[in-house]
Image 1 (cartoon, rainbow, N blue to C red):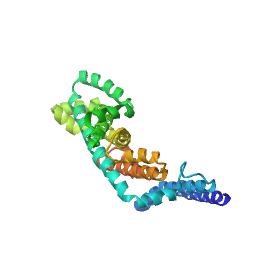
Image 2: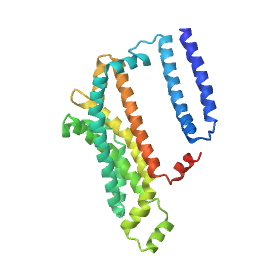
Image 3: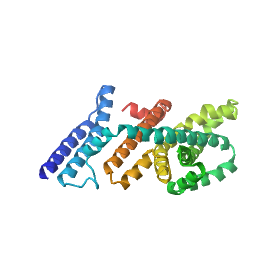
Length: 289
């Protein structure tokens, strides 16, 4: 036991020292700086996995309580066909479809109600109310309405992503200052020209904030919705089934796949945000650091 714990302590101290050195460096080359920025969280993640492995082995924790990362990796490698089928059902069908539909509908409705104070005053409180509804309450109803297959999960994702996009877009469309709006009025710009050339660009940071929030909400909503009825495939179905069979390593393998998919999805949205809002102070300050 002591050998594993000593190795974990030494590895942690060494990784901490390297990370402390990396975060204090300012490389002249942008490539080297980006590599250092990526190395810090990567090394931190590896350290957590090493400590996890050593603690499980050192204290001889039963795998049904907490499997070691090596055990989860072995299960993941030997279950690729099953994990891929679950990924297709949950992420490619339910998450992406619901995400696009929910975010797109929320954006369109926000643009349409932007010029109506009555609709804004009425929909925004409803949006805050619906956003507070627990997914475990919505999911069974959607399963009853749309059946056990992926359309019911899409409906849950649409509900979870619609109102965050609506609220953020409406707030973003009001971000342009009165001076900028007066300038567009001086140029005799129409309301749609003002929207396209001034208010919508000013709203992009708010819109992308909603897109990033929804990238995680969509995945959580689809997985939880699968607990309440689904065909014999899907991440949520696999997690609930394998827990009942005490196959905890398979449960953690599904969690790892879901976490990786969610992180990549969030990262793609963040990269798109940097490309679209390159003019924003937060993006420019990160590029010139």
